Image 1 (cartoon, helix red, strand yellow):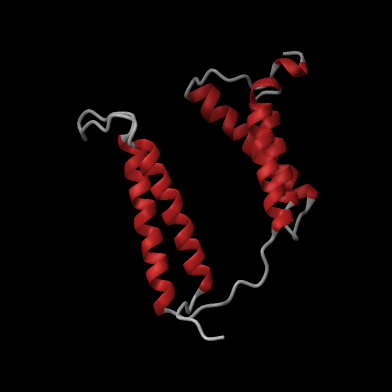
Image 2 (image 1 turned 135 degrees about the horizontal axis):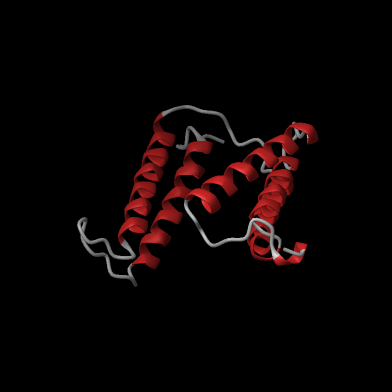
Length: 153
């Protein structure tokens, strides 16, 4: 069946960007904007949301001009695994600490890939956990536990 959408991936990606950007702009209207010199709480999120809307608009327009590949399969299982990983990160960061939360996030997210390799994923998780602890806790001084109270620290 012929359609005017020539690149379905660009169309749906652009539409998703547009909707998320519009939602952020609408939600950000409740906060004071401020100015470039004295930014309010809504300034940065609305600027980013506006850029997201711009990129989404380009994607949607491009989908009518450029021919591209069709959407073959929607990976629901993999999407659910990544969503659970992000939710677990949010739950674990206070109780287990930053390092274990990042390790779980990386390992579970990597498991969603068809090319999952435990050895490589574990190395990546440990490296990113160490890097995050160094940057966020040691250098920036953010008040988050490296190892949390659930682990006896």
